[in-house]
Length: 349
Ligand SMILES: [Cu+2]
Image (cartoon, rainbow, N blue to C red; front, side, top):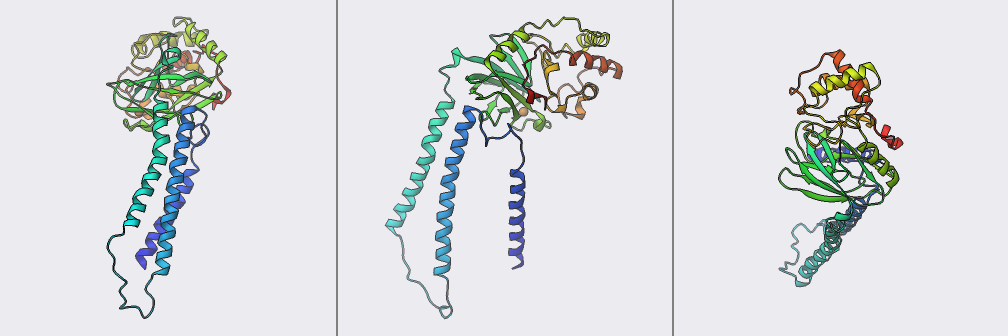
């Protein structure tokens, strides 16, 4: 009896926990209110599978309960042995055919969705972006537009955008649950998927493949804007002059410091050679390194000790740490890099 009570208590706690955890998450970081084609197709598959599983569960539980009540040993029947049977053709046919039918119900839409989502026939006429997963940030290369950026992926709404994905180091997985399913990024081969956002907004992305100590901090955003705003953003980004002189003296000094010590890894403008994130539109971002609240104070802290925020990142230990006053100036320089006005309001969250 005691063992049973323990098991029931554990079960109760687990159900309570799952109830609590299912309340976690936030808008535009959930697969359950899709705002893109891939996510919508995936949710439909989840619902079909779930309905089939619930059906099976109910049928099994009903039969189980009936048998348990109806055929339990009654008083005075202690020595009663039921009639022994062996094999039952009808039953065996039933429990073979029913699962086959259920599997077909799941398999047909799943296979057709798999081919649908892997379809690349419109790729050559669409916007193509090369995505590279890195420990622990994302690089986006708009090849034809000659734009490099990182962490914030701008896309136009209402059209398929093709992502050609690789990794520069270990396996990562690109996942924006509200827009589409997951896709692995591998170092040795390119994977392609498309995403399509129905409406404007900021959609949160996560790395979905354990890739190192800061895996859970490898956040990014997809910023979907109207096609007109997207064209404006492209133009703004293309017009960036990486050598433009900032307005304030502090930012000017910061620029010189940045060019001396940071530019060997980072890049401003369309240079594709960066090993660290491209910072062309750093002033338009709403997070530092994808996860840290956006403020000058935090940026200075990041420049002085990135390890505090993202353990195991490749910046830590690979640069000569500036003096705090120098870090302030570099921060002043980076914060004024704002080439575009195109940022949906929700991006400031
Ligand atoms: Cu990762």
